[in-house]
Length: 317
Image 1 (cartoon, rainbow, N blue to C red):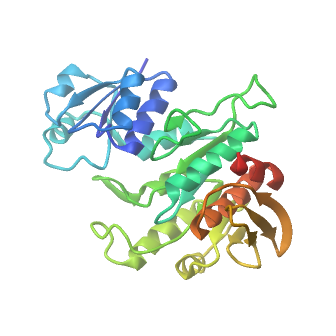
Image 2 (cartoon, helix red, strand yellow; image 1 turned 180 degrees about the horizontal axis):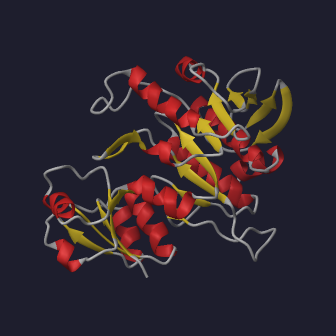
């Protein structure tokens, strides 16, 4: 059994990595400064030992095969300097995930300046409802699941196999102190949702163009037989795709792609594709942003083989 020690285990992403690694059979420990729900309770429920603080002494208590370093860790931290000075093997969370979990899977990445957690949760649920039993890593604990992350499960259609699908919240924040690329460039999705693109994270991005560059790096990793589901109302996304795109694109929010039809007072709405009725979502959520997220999810799920009617039923449930 290989042992990984996660430096910065209390974050929603690294806590999810911990849960997946534990499920995959790794021995998992970690450290962080302070722990808060929902990650603290999730890690406790999983029986994952957590050391408080970033001191070097923990390396003697947790002699791991590899140290997975989160982006909360900085040069100058005692534990980071000790890992480097001792020549111990270390890797970022996104790279560890890509090499040990995502390799060979059909990754569905949900990117955007905001709305990632909601949309990724909805997408994982739609695939689950359709019997596809996806794995997922989400920056929170969705109410339709008991954990923030899990490995792919056995699909309903073939209970003796493992689902190829993995839904991941694809974050544009940088990977680690030694890898300043956005996390999402490691994931190589086959299906990618681009929800929006605005200036954010002023601590690491100088301007909007710097974020667009990272999103274009993501676009470069999507195969030509994949699919990009892009918000057609976002000019910043359109400008990014015009820098070069080698993958089919379906838009949402526009008449040329997916859009909402009539919206009822109770929140339910019609789904249109190329102006033609395709389904109806009967839910009580309000707000155009929620409907746009739903359209993106329906399009992405269809690429994975879920028909529109089933996706609408899943969102309605």
